[in-house]
Image (cartoon, rainbow, N blue to C red; front, top):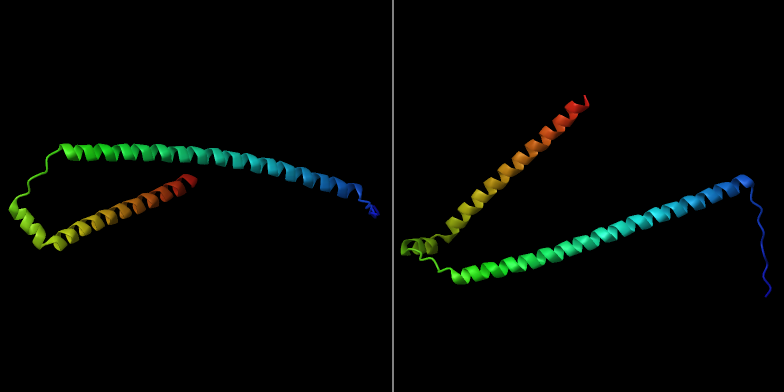
Amino acid sequence: MDEKLIHLKIDYLDSLETKKDILTLQKDFIGLRERIERFNSVRIAEINSKIKLGIAMRKTIDSLKKIKEILPEPKIPKILVKEEKENPVKRERKLDMKMQKLRDSRDIESQLRDIQNKLGSLHSRS
């Protein structure tokens, strides 16, 4: 084979800098590999936890179905049945309004807690 070889002459300082760069890259790749391995192990643990949770949920659902089969059906008075048939929308609106008020109060409380935490951290820094 006829190959033409090319030789380059590199300064001593340039060669040292290049070697440092290569070693730094190798170190970074090793660190990256370790982080990927940790991520994979955490991901496997997460998947196992989800599987266990799914099994527990299925067992709970089965238990609830069995309890529902065992318990007798409640007898609803005719007055309530008629009222429910006549005004199902009003009842739903009332429930929706109550839930909205509850959500709003929770949001306000969480915002107040966040503001208090921020104020506390600012005072501790001073």
